[in-house]
Image (cartoon, rainbow, N blue to C red; front, side, top):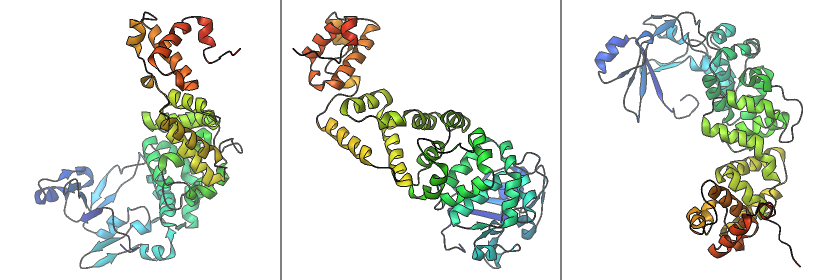
Length: 393
């Protein structure tokens, strides 16, 4: 509100203990009696209400081992991470700011409340959060905050990968992601997030980290595209290992590995046949994702865009002419092959794959009579190997 930004959600704090809150809001959901938190409202407008508390030690680097409830808002705010988060608003009292958050907002600074090393040791994820806020708000870190991040970045390895990844992905989609990544690189945070990947050894064929950091804000603000651009700066085998460790989920993992394994194949898909084969073997979703990456590389690295444009016109021509790409596009199916007595059993699938390859090269053969004739010829192993070679007299 002080920045003139409409809040995305509301967190309320109260001197009422959780049992009293549950009496006041019998339909509320408990967010953990130990921490005195309940959730009121509905799914469209949920509000967390927490009792004022003082946190004990953090042995698991995430949650306090014990809490003591208090009736003092200043004591509650003392457990927050950064001064700009250590403020509260009361309808009668106005802004309550015991730790200088408003001044740091004015000075555009990220500063911890109290000893930064203690704050980061309690929950190392605060390191990533602070860097994300710097990128999101275009703020700077105080020197003691930055130094403590450097010293304690290794503690991030003790945090679950899911928590690390979620916060890092938020960092990748800020308005000043380049700034956030520069801080990550200089504060040893990239080492902790990507383990053996970092630092990359020079420029790879798909990108250079120093140039990416400088220009990533030119790329579309899409987490998967920006993550792919970053991973393409690393050595391929290390990047593939990192993708597995990031726990992205099956579909996102498939896309990120495709970026590592198939980007060069797409680069050399320079004619109709090669482009149809690429889409057939890998799927149109992979093709679209890799094309989007190529477009972002053009923005970030000033790569030439003629291959992207060429593939666009080639694919447009394929679609206009309704040229077959998939098995389903063939003028015949497995039943036709069986009824004609050409093949049966598992040989049916193999024959259909060969016919798809043939019509990729020669789309004019995609009629039932021509494909049946071709299928009979392809029963000969030699003809099958030479299926895309036509001899002329």
